[in-house]
Length: 450
Image 1 (cartoon, one colour):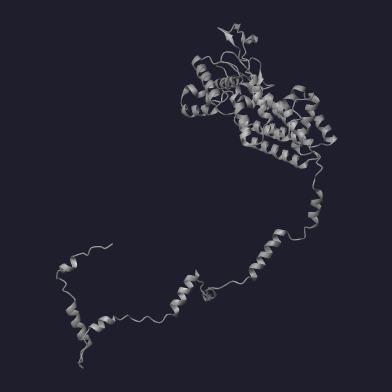
Image 2 (cartoon, one colour; image 1 turned 120 degrees about the vertical axis):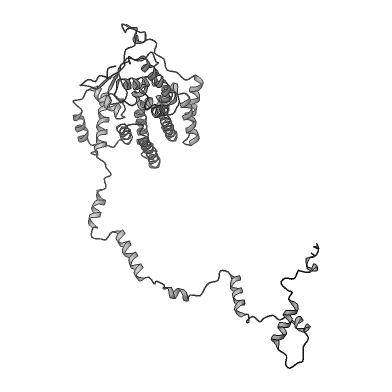
């Protein structure tokens, strides 16, 4: 199998069918499963078949088998079948190389099939009348809330085989001037959700990216018209600008389109005015380019093709001025720059605030540890305070004397009475011996009374 050929003037990739029938079967089968289950299936195969020779085409970028796999995957997404495909050269990516599909031949290749004569191409699916009316009614009462946008997005994914018609209905609803501004913004949210789920494991969901990429320049042209018509309603105008630029910023984070394409969409919406000298200089730079080159540049940069070659050139000039920053902007803030120059000798506000804080720290009274200890202790509660006062007012504790025992003891009128001898005698009389067993009276437990 020979590697793909590329010409010197314009880069072209010529696709050739593998001679190895088993390799072709593996590539075709894998492409069919990836179209059905999404890009995650391909990543799973890459992880599990790293050392398998039959899947080396996944890791050899630029090889003939890898080129055939990429082409087969693209044709299946576009609606072609395994045995019948379009023969016209095409651009897979705007601004990229031109792809030349292989011929569909019978036997040894000497005869062309009916598909090569333009017969047997699979027609795109169309929505039924009931489905179309339901989707149009859904878009007419659409609101910029999560549930409403999600309902429209789910309908689009469930009818991904009719992606072309679904995008056409969205385009019609966005381009109608009588559509309210809030509904237009909600439609833009639906487009964003569909793009976010175009890589989901839903059959033909990837078609939405291709269809919307062709229609988004005209969609942003309609948003610019609405934006310019609201000059007397600055609050609504700023709200639209905020939402549109936020959506573009989210698309940049998704890497779903190139930066050149998104720059074109943003330039179309903002439409920054230019001077006549800048427009004349830009048109002079485009004089040597043909109509096909201008159209290709517009497709690559996300610019609309409406209005013919002259309007396309003006859009290219406007985009170049927007990127280079040489457009005449009326709201340049030059007076403020002059005011800053006249106040250079004054200290900045931040330095003044810092010096003020420093002076406050220097003049503040710090409390030492000794002064802190001299402070009276604050009780936790009034109850504790009363308890503490009662404790301080009470006299010293007096030992409690059992008067009954003292009264029971006989008083001896012997002047030679010794108190210590009497205590020893009482101790020997009342304390039992250590080795003596307890009496039976003590072992008997008294019954509990309720």
